[in-house]
Image (cartoon, rainbow, N blue to C red; front, side, top):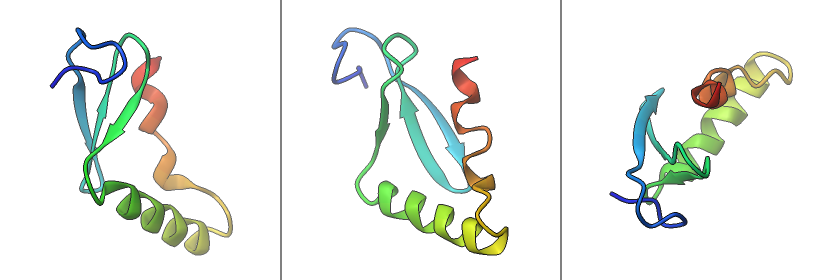
Amino acid sequence: MNCPACRIIKLLAMERDGIEIDYCPQCHGIWLQHGELEKFMEKAKENALASEGSFNFLDGIFDMYE
């Protein structure tokens, strides 16, 4: 699938804890499938509660841009 913002760049996909995240290597846009945002938010909430505010679930999500 092409990036909805760039139109010509192919999105790359990664999976994190069962959530598929598509991202654009050019504009750095992040795209989720239907229902994935809710899963993402629930995982972040679970991890925040389990680790007293530390969003460990988010660790590594944005490493794809480094």
